Image 1 (tube, protein in one colour):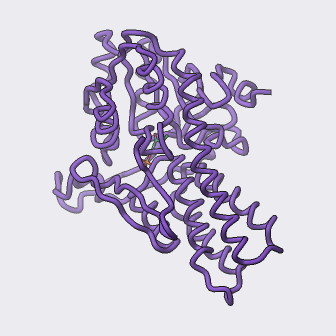
Image 2: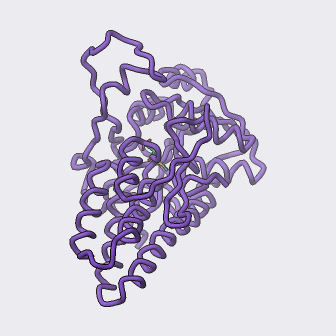
Image 3: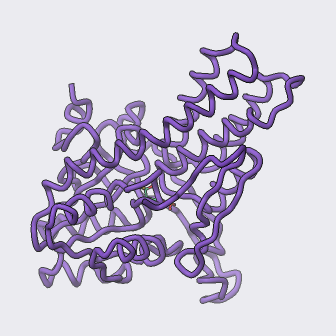
Length: 340
Ligand code: MRU
């Protein structure tokens, strides 16, 4: 399985996703500040993966702390720094909150044991994420039929998680069941997660993948060349409205127009039950240079005005089903996502 992120002898090692597929290089984070910067600069990206990175960042921040330092003050400082890295994917906040609970429950134990306890929690978050994705795969593969062509947007694969992937986990599970499926990967401008990461992952696994630019999906849908769409998610509101990579909304609207099922695959840690609908989900706006340049070269008028929202929100009415580790939820999501 792909090594997205790992704890290694008091450091955190991540594959540098900015360099793929041209180079397979690893970045070593030696401090929580390194981890925060790695998340901001997209060395690591994808909602569950940044949750795991944040948990490790918190563990590392305490791991490197001197006995004489004030643990509570240090914890707060590390927490605040990591919390500020990226605003949209709720998994980041979910993981930090989970780590905070463990910190608070273990205030009275020795400093050495506390450090180990925090690291163990981060390791559990990583391990559980892989198990969760495998469950999502098992539930979701039933939605994918032999011979189908599936469109995906961005990268919701092993690289976007601790391993296996969410949307790509469903595709992997269907493929490993012997279903002869093919995948169209949207290139996903401006960061090109589809072209660089999804194509790389699927190609490595021998799953047939065809790269398309983001503006080709409508043409291919109209021609009957796409049977289903599956994407990941960065934050799902209680009513099913789903924030995911910019361009997801466009694909979902197109899918509805062409009567093509549009599926979202995500762990329950991506569902933010505190948001009643998608209007309250914060949308990250990134650096204009990401749009002005490709691979370091400027493709427009230098300094031209740019908008660069990194995510959009797809209203629940465009989503056929949401696959989580607990099962396949159909509308009304407000009731059915709670699995109660
Ligand atoms: O900006 P990114 O690359 O972090 O955005 C990633 C996505 O939008 C993914 O589709 C989402 O996080 C799901 S990953 C399993």
